[in-house]
Length: 208
View 1 (spheres, helix red, strand yellow):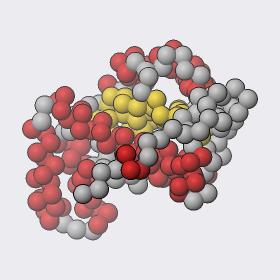
View 2 (spheres, rainbow, N blue to C red):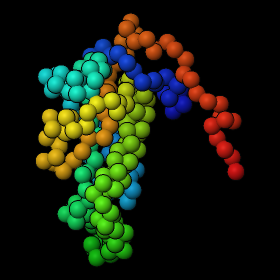
View 3 (cartoon, one colour):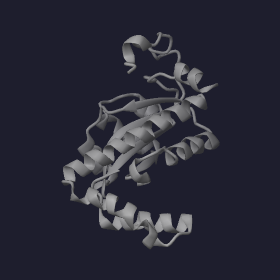
View 4 (spheres, rainbow, N blue to C red):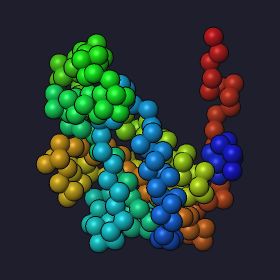
């Protein structure tokens, strides 16, 4: 499928079959996430890839009993850094210097901009970090659609309970959004044959 056809094909799948997603297709989606743009390229989050059925069963009640949690082939948990620290920034610039084979001192001007994030309150840092996860989420959904893999973005869950279950605070992370990946259950999903409802381009876009 081309890009637009893939977007026309996808929808927020409500029921899935539980069928396995081939390894190569899953890795392509994860590769796309790793290439998603973020502010400064910092990638201030981690993505948990959960395929263990027993763990998914524990997550389901935390996510309001939504069936996609256990019917999905995999659940991605996008988890933002709880704060931007000097240690995390140091690691990023060490990686950049190594990857680009440049002296780390040459990166100081850029480093000064990122260090400014540390002056934000912890709450504002978390908001900034969480926003980056939604960019990756969008990239993941498009990559999945191009592979004919269904996906459902999900905010309907108790963040604190999920964080505790997955021990995210110990990792310096906070859950922000979920993405169920799998294959649509056409026999049981009421949305599968419904047309998309979208505002007209004339109404949606303001051209200046």
